[in-house]
Structures are given as C-alpha cells and as structure tokens.
Image (cartoon, rainbow, N blue to C red; front, side, top):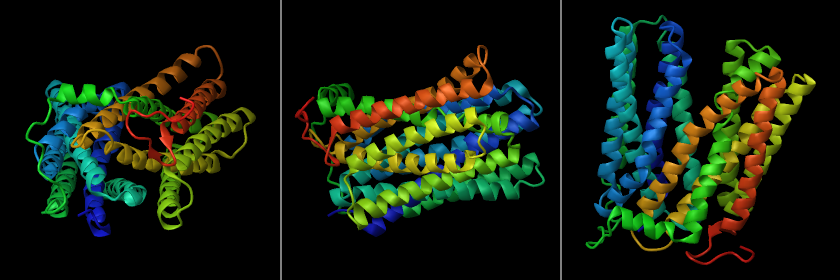
Length: 427
C-alpha cells in the first residue's frame, strides 16, 4: 500500500510546520538581534550557519528511521526538538537584552537543537515519502510538500510580523510559543497512524551506520548525486546573503523595497515549483532530469542577467529576480523528486540513510554557499567597484549551475536514476 494524495497532503502539513518554525529563527530573531539589540550581523549569521552545520548528522537520523521500523516517532521527536529549540532561541534573544552572555549561551544551545530537530524530523519525513510514494507521483509529492513549506514560511513571517507591532519581549515569547505549540500539534495530528499498512518493520540484521554509508558511497550513482547536491545547492544559496544588499547598493532600493524583492523571489519559486508539479505529473511534460537541467540552466541565465543589469544600470532587478525565483523553484522541486527516486536504489531499507546523506550535503552547502557568497563579495569590493564585485559573484554562481546541469545529464536517466552500479553511456 502506498501514500495517496491525502496522505501526501498530510505530510505536507508537517513540512509547512517545519518551515514556519525555522523562519522565526532565521529571519525574525536575526532582525531583532541586529536591529533592536544592535549586535553584529555576523553573530546572527554564525547562529544560522550553526543550525545548518549540525545537520551533518542527517545520515544518522535517516539510518535510525530505517532501522527502528517506525519513521513517525522520529518525525514527531524531531519536530518536538525543533519547537523547543525555536522557543529557547526566542528566550535567548530576550535574555541577551539584560544578560548578554547567558543569553548568548542559551542561543547557541537553542540553534544546535534547531538543527538537530530539523535534521531528524525532515530527513525521516522525506524518507517516509520516498518509501511509500509511487514513482509517478514523486515529482508531484515533492511539489506539494515544498509549496506547503513555502506557504508556511510566508504565512508565519507575515502574521508574526504584523502581530509583533508594537514589539515587546513578552509579546515575542507569546507569539513564538504559540507558533511552536501549534506546529507540533499539527505534526502529531498529520502523522497519526499514517504508517499503518505502509511501511514494513525494519530488517532484523540491519547493518551498522558506517557500513551502510560505505555501501551507499560505493554505488556510483549515489556518490555522484551527493556531489551534485552539494555543488548545485552551493550555487542555490550563494546569493542568499548578498541579493538584498546588491539591490540596495546598486539600484537604491530601501529596506522595505528590498524585503518586497525577497517576497517577489519567493513568489517566483512558488510558480516554478507549481510548474514542475503540473507539467511532470498532470500534463506529463518532460522528465525529472529535463526539469532539473532546465532549472539549473535557467537559474544560470537569470544570475547572468542580474549581474549585467547592474553593470548597465537598468531598472530591471525585480523581473530578473522573479525569473531567477521561477527557475530556482523548478530546480529545487525536481531535484527533491530525483532525490526521492534515487533513495530507493540499491539495498532495501537504505532510504533514510540515503536521504540523510544528501540532506547533510544540502545543509552543508547552504551554510557554506551563503557565507562564501558574502565573503567573496566583501573581498572583491576591496579591489573593484560594488556592481562589478557583486556581479562577479553572480557570474560564478551561474557557472556552478551550468556545471550542475551537466552533472544532472550524466547522473539521471530520463528522470529516474539508472540502476545502482550501472553507468549511463558516456560516463
């Protein structure tokens, strides 16, 4: 028995809750530290990078969900840890107002817990979907869950932003507490008995984690896909910390306008994801591989356009960013669909470990890409003007996306991975 559309929607509610809780820590709390508390922006950046870095533990969580015979407990447990971490992070920000060092220590512990919770819950959720979703539905399943996550992020950010006016520490704790409790309750309801009749018990002679990782790493397809995930996600996240400053420096956008630019980008991501879901599943246009390649090449062209309009001082930043968002969304959701396809390759009961390995590569790339993009822009500004400095970083991202597209052509075959151990002709 496999997941039906209603089951996929239920798991999407978990992803929506996860996005809603994480955005509080990567957006709202960061702004409070930098603006209201006047702390260095690098401190907030380090905390966000910390929650990405700790997700290198994803293979371990995936392995545990593979071998325990019940992924739901890891989904709920991870979301509980995430909720506790998010609320603790809010308490840490409030504490820093009167006692900086205790608040900072609490914040570091909280962001560690956020990373562990997101890793455990998110990896187990994707592994469950990879295990129980029919192959022809996986692209649509990835689209549904990621669209719901984006909705959760947007709805939470917008609602919390409105409710926090006027800001007070007590109001912050009340709102964050309500979001975390609501997300955890929704997770419990969404996963209640969802595995009944879907997932068999784990194999009694399950191999140790390191042995399982060595086995997966020995598969040419899985190993190549790990490199693809890291490279493409590095390209995806390199613009995360520099796009809004670029818009302000080069095009004179105010903070409010640059925030709206970010919203326009997310709107483009939503459209791109929707296009993949409708095109690949509803209309059966193209394969997952073709959507991945199109998303990578389109993202490269968009980044090149963003760089060139800055050099030419053309007021086209909004349409260029929306176009980038569309292709980013196409790439992201089709890559997740491909990841779900590949997770079922090779030895049985390795889905969670594979998803964990690729999730770890994605998380490390997210932290590395954002810091690398910002650092490169700062260094280049020492030797050249601002439009050229930022533009060179965008062109480098575009090159990474082109390389990623070429890798996807070799790794994926007709939207599905070639059988484990067999190479596509030409490799």
